[in-house]
Length: 179
Length: 160
Image (cartoon, rainbow over all chains, first blue to last red; front, side, top):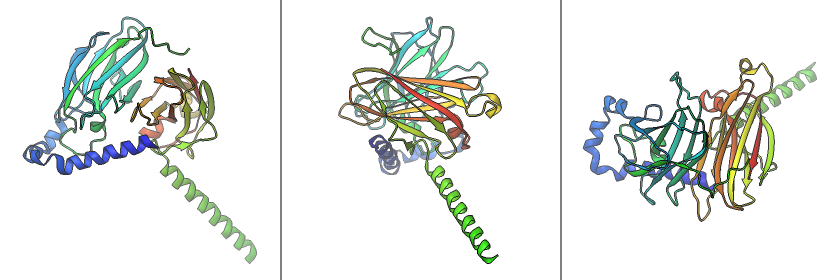
């Protein structure tokens, strides 16, 4: 399966970066690798809350860094129906491969989450798109990261370091969801 | 008596080998190495059904889009016995992976669906072009989170 080969290649690339590409940052790595620094890193279960509530149709720009690799946004739809959650990063970026995760906010804060839908972007466009039905009155967490962070095996720092943009967009007239 | 013991010995050896094979097969099969059921493809708008089991915990079907537009892939699961898991459906988990082509590479979508009593469902919606292929994997959250396997009926339906 080509996709699986690509995932493997990506994982191998991560190992390569860890061994060679980040040699100049060795001193920083040594500091970051303390247990406290590792514990302080955000992650899939504890993303950094941007305190930003996304408004449909408006893009929000941000940056992932080795210290801050998981961002959480909020979305509270006023109407029920299908919307597009979209994340975009630079095409060909060495360590930014867009990854988007939508979680239905769990009032009880009990894990695992009530519901989540996730997607990995197209590497040819670095665009990641989730089309899903949302319910008015519900709250959703929109979590952005990079596939490289998801598969990162190096403790102490995230792999991705780069800009991205994220949005919730209404469906345009060219999109017909099959009934 | 000796002949009977010999038969028992062979029977036990066969059972042992079969059990070992089943355990090895189950161990080798996972979300990244699903069991592709090539004889049950999803060609265009279509439906397939089957069972998720300890032996085949990650059944996968190849979906081929029959036209340009949007595809909605729906997973529905139900308990094999109504009393399984205390009468509550195991949470389904579905993943769709695009097969690489000139325009797309590395794309994947997943969802863990919603439960409603002894039944559960989830859906993924994505853009397709005629002829593009996707691997659609049907499994249970239980198989990913707990490492323990369970039985469930599943149906995958593609709408285009």
